[in-house]
Length: 404
Image (cartoon, rainbow, N blue to C red):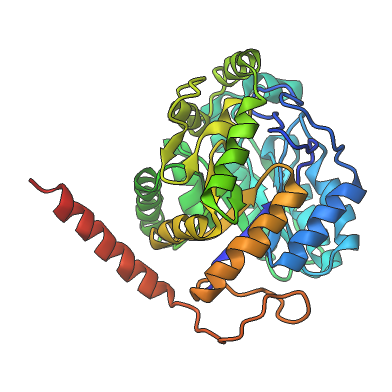
Protein backbone atom coordinates (compact mmCIF):
# COMPACT_ATOMS: atom_id res chain seq x y z
CA UNK A 1 0.00 0.00 0.00
CA UNK A 2 1.32 3.44 -0.90
CA UNK A 3 1.30 6.12 1.76
CA UNK A 4 -0.88 9.15 1.01
CA UNK A 5 0.24 12.75 1.52
CA UNK A 6 -1.93 15.85 1.78
CA UNK A 7 -0.87 19.48 2.05
CA UNK A 8 -2.54 22.41 3.84
CA UNK A 9 -4.18 25.58 2.51
CA UNK A 10 -3.48 28.55 4.84
CA UNK A 11 -6.83 30.29 4.49
CA UNK A 12 -5.89 32.55 7.43
CA UNK A 13 -2.88 33.93 5.55
CA UNK A 14 0.69 32.82 5.08
CA UNK A 15 4.18 34.13 5.70
CA UNK A 16 7.82 33.41 6.45
CA UNK A 17 7.10 33.26 10.17
CA UNK A 18 4.76 31.02 12.16
CA UNK A 19 1.26 32.36 11.49
CA UNK A 20 -1.00 31.98 14.51
CA UNK A 21 -4.72 31.47 14.76
CA UNK A 22 -7.38 29.00 15.82
CA UNK A 23 -8.28 27.39 19.15
CA UNK A 24 -8.86 30.66 20.95
CA UNK A 25 -5.85 32.43 19.40
CA UNK A 26 -6.16 35.77 17.62
CA UNK A 27 -5.09 35.73 13.98
CA UNK A 28 -1.74 37.08 12.87
CA UNK A 29 0.08 36.06 16.04
CA UNK A 30 3.38 35.85 14.19
CA UNK A 31 2.83 37.74 10.96
CA UNK A 32 0.66 36.78 7.99
CA UNK A 33 2.09 38.82 5.10
CA UNK A 34 0.51 36.85 2.25
CA UNK A 35 -3.28 37.24 2.17
CA UNK A 36 -5.31 34.08 1.43
CA UNK A 37 -6.47 35.10 -2.03
CA UNK A 38 -7.66 32.56 -4.57
CA UNK A 39 -4.62 33.48 -6.65
CA UNK A 40 -2.13 32.66 -3.89
CA UNK A 41 -3.97 29.62 -2.57
CA UNK A 42 -4.24 28.47 -6.18
CA UNK A 43 -0.45 28.61 -6.45
CA UNK A 44 -0.16 26.35 -3.43
CA UNK A 45 -2.87 23.97 -4.64
CA UNK A 46 -1.40 23.62 -8.14
CA UNK A 47 2.10 23.10 -6.74
CA UNK A 48 0.87 20.45 -4.31
CA UNK A 49 -0.95 18.68 -7.13
CA UNK A 50 2.13 18.69 -9.35
CA UNK A 51 4.44 17.50 -6.57
CA UNK A 52 2.29 14.46 -5.79
CA UNK A 53 0.11 15.43 -2.84
CA UNK A 54 -3.27 13.74 -3.03
CA UNK A 55 -5.30 16.42 -1.29
CA UNK A 56 -5.28 19.65 0.69
CA UNK A 57 -6.84 20.38 4.07
CA UNK A 58 -8.54 23.66 4.88
CA UNK A 59 -9.14 24.85 8.46
CA UNK A 60 -12.43 26.08 9.91
CA UNK A 61 -13.31 28.87 12.31
CA UNK A 62 -13.69 32.62 12.64
CA UNK A 63 -9.93 33.05 12.18
CA UNK A 64 -9.87 31.91 8.53
CA UNK A 65 -11.81 32.06 5.28
CA UNK A 66 -14.78 29.73 4.79
CA UNK A 67 -13.56 26.31 3.65
CA UNK A 68 -16.54 25.37 1.46
CA UNK A 69 -16.45 28.52 -0.66
CA UNK A 70 -12.68 28.71 -0.94
CA UNK A 71 -12.16 25.12 -2.03
CA UNK A 72 -15.06 25.28 -4.48
CA UNK A 73 -13.26 28.13 -6.21
CA UNK A 74 -9.98 26.21 -6.22
CA UNK A 75 -11.48 23.25 -8.07
CA UNK A 76 -11.40 25.45 -11.17
CA UNK A 77 -7.63 25.97 -11.02
CA UNK A 78 -6.70 22.35 -10.24
CA UNK A 79 -7.35 19.04 -11.98
CA UNK A 80 -6.80 16.14 -9.58
CA UNK A 81 -6.22 17.52 -6.07
CA UNK A 82 -8.87 16.58 -3.50
CA UNK A 83 -10.03 19.02 -0.85
CA UNK A 84 -10.50 18.06 2.80
CA UNK A 85 -13.16 20.58 3.78
CA UNK A 86 -13.18 21.23 7.52
CA UNK A 87 -16.51 22.29 9.03
CA UNK A 88 -18.47 22.12 12.28
CA UNK A 89 -21.80 20.30 12.48
CA UNK A 90 -23.26 22.96 14.78
CA UNK A 91 -23.06 25.62 12.10
CA UNK A 92 -25.00 23.86 9.37
CA UNK A 93 -27.80 21.28 9.26
CA UNK A 94 -27.15 17.64 8.29
CA UNK A 95 -29.46 17.56 5.26
CA UNK A 96 -27.99 20.71 3.73
CA UNK A 97 -24.45 19.48 4.52
CA UNK A 98 -25.15 16.16 2.81
CA UNK A 99 -26.56 18.03 -0.19
CA UNK A 100 -23.59 20.43 -0.35
CA UNK A 101 -21.09 17.59 -0.21
CA UNK A 102 -23.01 15.74 -2.92
CA UNK A 103 -23.04 18.82 -5.16
CA UNK A 104 -19.33 19.39 -4.54
CA UNK A 105 -18.62 15.76 -5.37
CA UNK A 106 -20.62 15.86 -8.61
CA UNK A 107 -19.30 19.21 -9.82
CA UNK A 108 -15.66 18.45 -8.93
CA UNK A 109 -15.79 14.87 -10.22
CA UNK A 110 -15.21 13.28 -6.84
CA UNK A 111 -12.69 15.61 -5.24
CA UNK A 112 -14.12 16.34 -1.79
CA UNK A 113 -13.61 14.77 1.64
CA UNK A 114 -15.01 16.07 4.92
CA UNK A 115 -13.01 16.92 8.03
CA UNK A 116 -15.68 17.03 10.72
CA UNK A 117 -14.68 19.26 13.65
CA UNK A 118 -16.83 19.13 16.77
CA UNK A 119 -15.35 22.37 18.17
CA UNK A 120 -13.57 22.91 21.47
CA UNK A 121 -13.54 26.70 21.96
CA UNK A 122 -16.65 27.81 23.91
CA UNK A 123 -16.32 31.53 23.10
CA UNK A 124 -16.07 30.92 19.36
CA UNK A 125 -18.92 28.39 19.43
CA UNK A 126 -21.17 30.93 21.14
CA UNK A 127 -20.21 33.56 18.57
CA UNK A 128 -21.74 31.26 15.97
CA UNK A 129 -24.86 30.78 18.06
CA UNK A 130 -23.88 27.43 19.54
CA UNK A 131 -24.39 27.25 23.32
CA UNK A 132 -24.07 23.49 23.85
CA UNK A 133 -21.44 22.17 26.24
CA UNK A 134 -18.70 19.80 25.13
CA UNK A 135 -20.61 16.59 25.89
CA UNK A 136 -23.66 17.88 24.04
CA UNK A 137 -21.58 18.94 21.04
CA UNK A 138 -20.26 15.41 20.65
CA UNK A 139 -23.78 14.01 20.97
CA UNK A 140 -24.88 16.35 18.21
CA UNK A 141 -21.92 15.32 16.03
CA UNK A 142 -22.99 11.69 16.33
CA UNK A 143 -26.57 12.52 15.36
CA UNK A 144 -25.31 14.67 12.48
CA UNK A 145 -23.10 11.95 11.03
CA UNK A 146 -25.79 9.31 11.45
CA UNK A 147 -28.27 11.39 9.43
CA UNK A 148 -25.70 12.36 6.81
CA UNK A 149 -24.50 8.81 6.19
CA UNK A 150 -28.06 7.52 5.91
CA UNK A 151 -28.87 10.22 3.35
CA UNK A 152 -25.79 9.28 1.32
CA UNK A 153 -27.05 5.68 1.28
CA UNK A 154 -30.25 6.88 -0.37
CA UNK A 155 -32.52 6.53 2.65
CA UNK A 156 -35.45 8.75 3.47
CA UNK A 157 -34.53 9.83 6.98
CA UNK A 158 -36.82 10.52 9.90
CA UNK A 159 -34.79 11.30 13.00
CA UNK A 160 -35.82 12.78 16.33
CA UNK A 161 -32.61 13.11 18.27
CA UNK A 162 -31.74 15.07 21.36
CA UNK A 163 -30.16 17.87 19.29
CA UNK A 164 -31.16 17.32 15.65
CA UNK A 165 -34.55 16.56 14.13
CA UNK A 166 -35.43 15.91 10.49
CA UNK A 167 -38.57 14.58 8.79
CA UNK A 168 -38.66 13.04 5.34
CA UNK A 169 -35.10 14.09 4.55
CA UNK A 170 -33.90 12.72 1.21
CA UNK A 171 -31.35 13.62 -1.46
CA UNK A 172 -32.30 13.96 -5.12
CA UNK A 173 -28.82 12.80 -6.15
CA UNK A 174 -26.35 10.60 -4.30
CA UNK A 175 -22.63 11.31 -4.12
CA UNK A 176 -20.43 9.05 -6.21
CA UNK A 177 -18.21 8.17 -4.53
CA UNK A 178 -19.43 8.88 -1.01
CA UNK A 179 -16.98 11.40 0.53
CA UNK A 180 -14.58 10.06 3.13
CA UNK A 181 -15.13 11.42 6.64
CA UNK A 182 -11.98 12.48 8.50
CA UNK A 183 -12.38 12.92 12.23
CA UNK A 184 -9.99 13.58 15.10
CA UNK A 185 -10.15 13.94 18.85
CA UNK A 186 -8.43 12.67 21.97
CA UNK A 187 -11.34 12.59 24.42
CA UNK A 188 -13.43 9.52 25.26
CA UNK A 189 -16.41 10.98 23.41
CA UNK A 190 -14.29 11.61 20.31
CA UNK A 191 -13.12 8.02 20.25
CA UNK A 192 -16.68 6.72 20.29
CA UNK A 193 -17.73 8.99 17.40
CA UNK A 194 -14.68 8.04 15.33
CA UNK A 195 -15.30 4.34 15.89
CA UNK A 196 -18.88 4.56 14.63
CA UNK A 197 -18.69 7.06 11.79
CA UNK A 198 -15.17 8.01 10.62
CA UNK A 199 -13.36 6.59 7.63
CA UNK A 200 -10.05 8.14 8.70
CA UNK A 201 -9.12 8.86 12.31
CA UNK A 202 -6.72 11.80 12.62
CA UNK A 203 -4.24 12.57 15.36
CA UNK A 204 -1.97 15.54 15.85
CA UNK A 205 1.74 14.82 15.86
CA UNK A 206 2.92 13.37 19.16
CA UNK A 207 5.89 11.06 19.85
CA UNK A 208 5.36 7.62 18.30
CA UNK A 209 4.62 5.80 21.58
CA UNK A 210 1.82 8.26 22.41
CA UNK A 211 0.45 8.01 18.87
CA UNK A 212 0.56 4.22 19.03
CA UNK A 213 -1.45 4.21 22.27
CA UNK A 214 -4.08 6.46 20.71
CA UNK A 215 -4.36 4.41 17.51
CA UNK A 216 -4.70 1.13 19.37
CA UNK A 217 -7.41 2.72 21.56
CA UNK A 218 -9.47 3.87 18.56
CA UNK A 219 -8.77 0.59 16.74
CA UNK A 220 -10.26 -1.38 19.64
CA UNK A 221 -13.33 0.87 19.76
CA UNK A 222 -13.87 0.45 16.02
CA UNK A 223 -13.53 -3.33 16.31
CA UNK A 224 -16.46 -3.35 18.74
CA UNK A 225 -18.48 -1.63 16.02
CA UNK A 226 -17.25 -4.21 13.49
CA UNK A 227 -15.46 -1.45 11.59
CA UNK A 228 -11.90 -0.87 10.40
CA UNK A 229 -10.54 2.67 10.11
CA UNK A 230 -7.63 4.22 8.29
CA UNK A 231 -5.30 6.41 10.32
CA UNK A 232 -3.81 9.81 9.54
CA UNK A 233 -1.54 12.30 11.28
CA UNK A 234 -1.35 16.10 11.09
CA UNK A 235 2.17 17.60 11.20
CA UNK A 236 4.19 20.55 10.03
CA UNK A 237 7.48 19.93 8.24
CA UNK A 238 10.87 21.58 7.80
CA UNK A 239 12.91 19.43 5.43
CA UNK A 240 16.26 20.45 3.94
CA UNK A 241 19.23 18.92 2.13
CA UNK A 242 21.06 18.65 5.47
CA UNK A 243 19.93 18.37 9.06
CA UNK A 244 21.87 21.50 9.98
CA UNK A 245 19.98 23.58 7.42
CA UNK A 246 16.62 22.32 8.68
CA UNK A 247 17.40 23.10 12.32
CA UNK A 248 18.69 26.55 11.41
CA UNK A 249 15.28 27.24 9.86
CA UNK A 250 13.49 25.94 12.97
CA UNK A 251 15.69 28.14 15.15
CA UNK A 252 14.97 31.15 12.91
CA UNK A 253 11.22 30.61 13.25
CA UNK A 254 11.30 30.46 17.03
CA UNK A 255 13.75 33.38 17.29
CA UNK A 256 11.15 35.53 15.55
CA UNK A 257 8.67 34.76 18.33
CA UNK A 258 8.69 37.08 21.33
CA UNK A 259 7.96 36.12 24.92
CA UNK A 260 4.93 38.42 24.77
CA UNK A 261 3.55 36.46 21.79
CA UNK A 262 4.01 33.18 23.61
CA UNK A 263 2.37 34.44 26.78
CA UNK A 264 -0.61 35.89 24.91
CA UNK A 265 -1.17 32.80 22.75
CA UNK A 266 -0.78 30.33 25.59
CA UNK A 267 -3.28 32.29 27.68
CA UNK A 268 -5.78 31.89 24.87
CA UNK A 269 -5.07 28.19 24.43
CA UNK A 270 -5.48 27.57 28.16
CA UNK A 271 -9.21 28.21 27.77
CA UNK A 272 -9.67 25.50 25.14
CA UNK A 273 -11.86 22.52 26.02
CA UNK A 274 -9.99 20.37 23.49
CA UNK A 275 -8.14 17.40 24.99
CA UNK A 276 -5.93 17.33 21.91
CA UNK A 277 -4.97 20.98 22.48
CA UNK A 278 -4.12 20.20 26.10
CA UNK A 279 -1.82 17.42 24.90
CA UNK A 280 -0.17 19.79 22.40
CA UNK A 281 0.51 22.36 25.12
CA UNK A 282 1.97 19.71 27.40
CA UNK A 283 4.60 18.86 24.80
CA UNK A 284 6.31 22.24 25.05
CA UNK A 285 5.36 23.18 28.60
CA UNK A 286 3.06 26.02 27.59
CA UNK A 287 5.85 28.47 26.89
CA UNK A 288 9.18 26.80 27.60
CA UNK A 289 11.61 27.38 24.70
CA UNK A 290 13.95 24.70 26.01
CA UNK A 291 13.84 21.09 24.89
CA UNK A 292 11.52 21.77 21.97
CA UNK A 293 12.83 18.65 20.22
CA UNK A 294 10.53 16.25 22.06
CA UNK A 295 11.55 13.19 20.01
CA UNK A 296 14.23 12.77 17.33
CA UNK A 297 13.26 15.15 14.48
CA UNK A 298 9.95 16.06 16.18
CA UNK A 299 9.87 19.74 17.18
CA UNK A 300 7.16 21.42 19.27
CA UNK A 301 8.10 25.02 18.47
CA UNK A 302 5.11 25.75 16.23
CA UNK A 303 2.72 25.16 19.13
CA UNK A 304 4.20 28.08 21.08
CA UNK A 305 2.17 30.54 18.99
CA UNK A 306 -0.28 28.43 16.97
CA UNK A 307 -3.38 26.61 18.10
CA UNK A 308 -4.16 23.13 16.83
CA UNK A 309 -1.37 21.08 15.30
CA UNK A 310 1.81 22.32 16.95
CA UNK A 311 4.58 19.88 16.07
CA UNK A 312 6.87 19.68 13.07
CA UNK A 313 9.13 17.09 11.49
CA UNK A 314 12.56 18.72 11.23
CA UNK A 315 15.67 17.31 9.58
CA UNK A 316 17.29 16.21 6.38
CA UNK A 317 15.10 14.65 3.73
CA UNK A 318 16.32 11.19 4.80
CA UNK A 319 15.68 11.89 8.48
CA UNK A 320 12.16 13.16 7.86
CA UNK A 321 11.51 10.08 5.70
CA UNK A 322 12.75 7.92 8.59
CA UNK A 323 10.23 9.47 10.99
CA UNK A 324 7.42 9.08 8.46
CA UNK A 325 8.32 5.43 8.05
CA UNK A 326 8.30 5.03 11.85
CA UNK A 327 4.77 6.43 12.03
CA UNK A 328 3.75 4.22 9.11
CA UNK A 329 4.82 1.16 11.10
CA UNK A 330 2.21 2.13 13.69
CA UNK A 331 -0.53 2.05 11.05
CA UNK A 332 -0.52 5.66 9.82
CA UNK A 333 -1.20 5.70 6.07
CA UNK A 334 -2.18 9.35 5.53
CA UNK A 335 -0.04 12.37 6.36
CA UNK A 336 -1.46 15.91 6.35
CA UNK A 337 1.46 18.31 6.28
CA UNK A 338 2.19 22.03 6.20
CA UNK A 339 5.06 24.48 6.64
CA UNK A 340 5.91 28.16 6.55
CA UNK A 341 5.64 29.52 3.94
CA UNK A 342 3.33 26.86 2.51
CA UNK A 343 4.31 27.38 -1.10
CA UNK A 344 8.05 26.99 -0.55
CA UNK A 345 7.80 24.20 2.03
CA UNK A 346 5.61 22.17 -0.31
CA UNK A 347 8.54 22.11 -2.75
CA UNK A 348 11.13 21.29 -0.08
CA UNK A 349 9.09 18.26 0.99
CA UNK A 350 7.78 17.29 -2.43
CA UNK A 351 11.16 17.42 -4.16
CA UNK A 352 13.17 16.24 -1.15
CA UNK A 353 11.29 13.70 0.95
CA UNK A 354 8.80 12.16 -1.50
CA UNK A 355 11.56 10.85 -3.83
CA UNK A 356 13.23 9.22 -0.81
CA UNK A 357 9.99 7.47 0.12
CA UNK A 358 9.49 6.48 -3.50
CA UNK A 359 12.92 4.84 -3.59
CA UNK A 360 12.02 2.96 -0.42
CA UNK A 361 8.84 1.68 -2.06
CA UNK A 362 6.51 3.52 0.34
CA UNK A 363 5.01 6.08 -2.02
CA UNK A 364 4.19 6.63 -5.67
CA UNK A 365 2.92 9.72 -7.42
CA UNK A 366 -0.90 9.56 -7.68
CA UNK A 367 -0.79 10.76 -11.29
CA UNK A 368 2.21 9.18 -13.08
CA UNK A 369 3.32 11.10 -16.11
CA UNK A 370 4.69 14.59 -16.73
CA UNK A 371 5.44 16.22 -13.39
CA UNK A 372 5.61 12.92 -11.50
CA UNK A 373 8.88 11.70 -10.05
CA UNK A 374 10.93 9.42 -12.28
CA UNK A 375 10.66 5.86 -10.98
CA UNK A 376 13.61 4.41 -12.87
CA UNK A 377 13.71 1.25 -10.83
CA UNK A 378 9.93 0.61 -11.00
CA UNK A 379 10.11 -0.52 -7.39
CA UNK A 380 7.39 -2.48 -5.68
CA UNK A 381 5.27 -0.71 -3.07
CA UNK A 382 5.82 -2.34 0.32
CA UNK A 383 2.72 -4.36 1.32
CA UNK A 384 1.02 -2.80 4.31
CA UNK A 385 1.03 -6.16 6.05
CA UNK A 386 4.83 -6.04 5.89
CA UNK A 387 4.81 -2.63 7.59
CA UNK A 388 2.71 -4.12 10.39
CA UNK A 389 5.10 -7.05 10.72
CA UNK A 390 7.97 -4.61 11.07
CA UNK A 391 5.97 -2.68 13.67
CA UNK A 392 5.43 -5.81 15.77
CA UNK A 393 9.12 -6.67 15.56
CA UNK A 394 9.96 -3.09 16.51
CA UNK A 395 7.70 -3.21 19.57
CA UNK A 396 9.13 -6.56 20.67
CA UNK A 397 12.67 -5.21 20.39
CA UNK A 398 11.71 -2.21 22.53
CA UNK A 399 10.32 -4.52 25.21
CA UNK A 400 13.51 -6.60 25.25
CA UNK A 401 15.69 -3.53 25.53
CA UNK A 402 13.54 -2.15 28.36
CA UNK A 403 13.55 -5.44 30.27
CA UNK A 404 15.86 -5.54 33.34
